[in-house]
Length: 328
Ligand code: FE
Ligand code: FE
Ligand code: ZN
Image (cartoon, rainbow, N blue to C red):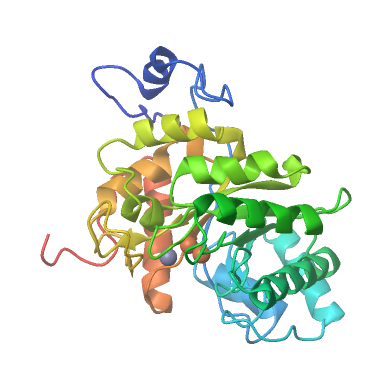
């Protein structure tokens, strides 16, 4: 079937015309882009407890063609020894099944801008080990991390410490791209605003090794209205950071209203963002080809329904919300 997606009409204009009238951002991606031929990449965060190949099989079973996984116990802990044969089996599986780029997730307790040196040292060591492991096991993927919490030191000092850690770890020869995740802004989290993320990226010397993963629940909770003005939010991202730096999405609904700064994920269509907004995200040409990762509270059947929803939306349909029609 021919792709007859109309784009998103806004004030009577197609989205790409609207962008043209708003002026160019850093990337130049928002002018003149009319369609999308990139492969649609969708998957969920899978358990790493049964090893590498098992993750690929699990993701494929649910209908995914990308996935996320924790590089070690999400609360920290020691790295497991590498099972080289298992890693090689996953690499083969991904190639043979047409998978796109994976989005590995650092433990969420790492804090590159902690107040105590021991906290920062652990974050440094764990990230260094994780990146070495990815080079050995799964080269060329994304490694996503939470920038950190400045715990009273101030955003400016937080930004400085995060950039300093990246400058100490990143190497010219690495094949992994490290992604800063957009944060909801709870507590003293750094990275709620695009400006804070841009400030970190600006200080990283090996700039081509770092980029951004946008979490829909987090930006919504952080105050960016992706429901009523997705185009405006993307244009803002382009002005402040540059859309060429947007490499992956976490697609999560939110239990809370825009600006709540809570970071509580909901199933797709069951929160304040809603299924229609996710259908627009699935269809947006600027977001085409970026891996979209579900971190929603679900069982396997629920993730499979959400993956099917995104695929149907991307194909130009208006799919029913994935979890039934009960209470609108
Ligand atoms: Fe995260
Ligand atoms: Fe996330
Ligand atoms: Zn979250």
